[in-house]
Every structure is written in C-alpha cells, then in structure tokens.
Image 1 (cartoon, rainbow, N blue to C red):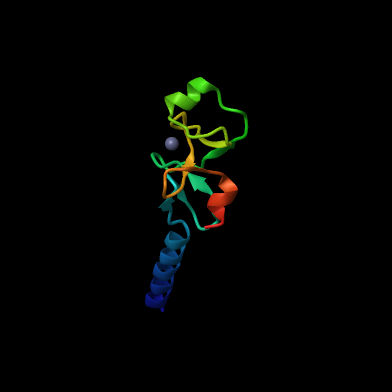
Image 2: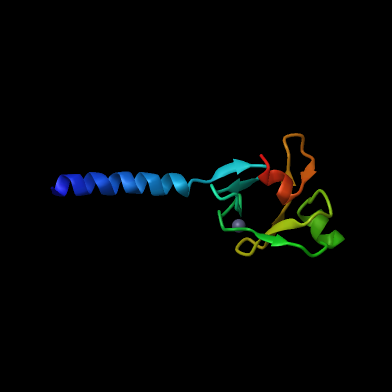
Length: 96
Ligand SMILES: [Zn+2]
C-alpha cells in the first residue's frame, strides 16, 4: 500500500519536473508555456516595452529597438536572437 503511494509520488515528481524544465533557445530559457526566463539566474523575464536608450543598448549589446526582455534580479536586458544572430520579437520566438 505505502509502496504504491511512494511510486505515485515519484511519478508525480517526475511529471512536475518535466513541466518545469527550461529549454534554452534564442539566448534565453523557455518553459513549456513559452514564458522567457533569464539565461543567468532563470528568473521569469519581464517584457520591456519602452524604447530602450542607446546607453542601455550598447551596454548589453542589444540588437534592435524591438521590445527586449529584462531580468529584475540581474538588472540586465536581453534581446532574442535567432540561429543567425538576428534580432527577433517575442511573438516570432513563440512560433517556434
Ligand atoms: Zn537574471
């Protein structure tokens, strides 16, 4: 009886871990719900819709004026890049 409960718990844990597994793509991490995460600390990134200033852009070598992603923990900005190193929007990235 207790063995089957334990087995159930183990499988539940595996399923949970699989769901929370982050996949690296386009320079950031993604969960199964296609939310972007920081490539450094794996915090959920905030979509920064403001036009980023030239200073910030050069500091973080951001590629475009497209909305970029911000990590509040690292205080860093990230742009999404495709396999060719070209900038892409969050919407484009989610299509993959
Ligand atoms: Zn971070």
